[in-house]
Length: 230
Image (cartoon, rainbow, N blue to C red; front, side, top):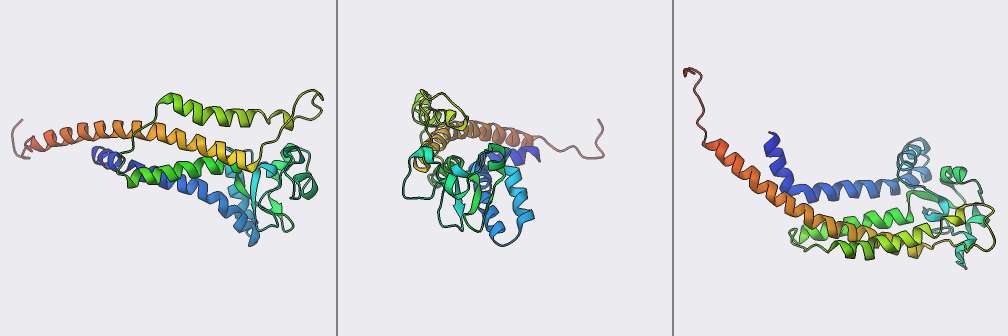
């Protein structure tokens, strides 16, 4: 049974991956829907679950059912929108994480902007990879580093000092934008699976061939009758 399951998995792993990623990136959108419809207790379970893997800061999250899709910090320099400080204005980061929204600003999605971009790009490539019969050629590791790791590393780390209060005036502070978070997150997710999935496919093909030979040999072994002597 274990061999049969492994054989099935070698042919269907990409569908399993896509389903898991779809559920992981899709359930956070359910949290604000539940909040809007008065199911706060169920929504809090989703927010709490995703809080272990995401910072959930409201000024770096998307909002549903409100006048704006996001509320940027004034430090980001985005004009034409009500800022986070104007709309919400919670200074304590721990309290900000726990803020899920209200009727005035809407309700935040349980994953931040960058994480949503990461997993949506992984899901998108996974679907294309499956439709192409898992025949897409992988990228070299250095492209994954240059296009996947470097942009998200620069954009993510360069805004860390902006979260620390009372920083020296000479230190340049910045806050990223939803566009940059989506772009760098999408690149990271895309490059990661573009690098990994073809490698996994190669391993799965070798495993499939090995299991097939094993099961063929097992089928050729005669079954001993119960009354046969040992």
